Length: 447
Image (cartoon, rainbow, N blue to C red; front, side, top):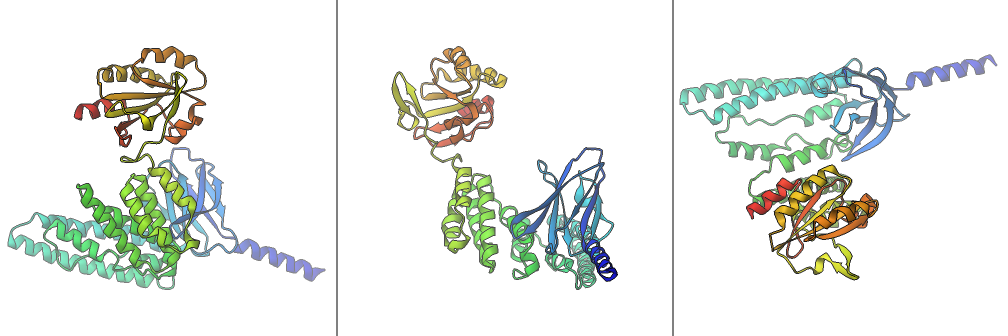
């Protein structure tokens, strides 16, 4: 009996000791109430647990056999407030200012995170100083001054490389080593004269320190974020056509670098969501046709494509969703209208004070434009307000949209606020999506 009791005590003690956790303190006067723990894996955030923040403090136990890697504490979804940290089977205790987490985060425990955080902060300072030299060099002309600046830059670059090497030695046999190596930023041995040549060098060497077969990086969100940065922030142009060519080339470059099929699938999906977010239908179609459709069948997801297509179905250049209504006992369709060269589809509501202000202004502005037809859909719970107000807009096509937000037309146009405007050409393609009446007015004044 005594042996069994002793064994039970030892077992309980071992279980308690082996339970790892993350504890945090938010140094803020604002009242944050919850925090969610995610594992960052590939291009995905995998939900682990959530906890209540009480008096600025929280604690979350890691599940048994939780995988080592990069994790995220999300405490403000609306403003993307989060802190990322490394978990490697050790307790993690931290505190930070939630309004400025990157520069204020401090780890009381976890050698992995103390080292990596120190590296990130010091590396940022080195990079800021090196970048300042490069920017100064762009506008410098005197031979003596440029020579001196080049000499100072070379000395600073040598010290930066020593700093990088020393941190990699400190991180040996730690998970942090993988991220410290991958965060190493390339700097040219000599200052570069023009911004364009500098940008070319940045693009050429952007992935110099990245091992795309590193399992630790593959199992984190690091590669996904890095690739997104490369595609969107190092490939810019004011010319839309040139911009799309740059996007296509960058997409090909990064997809070709990825050997791991699962990661390639996740990166392609990430780029699809990113291009759909900015309603770039050309790139969405390009990525689907050239990369997504060529993935193995087991890595394709019909829901992904459906969500992407839903996001861009109302993009500029897309055919407007059909609108059907009854008029004097006859079924009418938007697609069959041939009365105008321009159409304004506006969703409004008699219970929306802003709408009641803007609709009369819109009516007065449009009423004498013979080549513009307004289709006004009033989203209502009943007919009372509709019957009272639409008599004032006799030149419009007025449609009663019962069930308000659940009305089929409103759902087809993804309406979640009123008023919402769409300007269509004579073929019913969307050519503008003004936010306010003043934007509608500006559009027609310009054209």
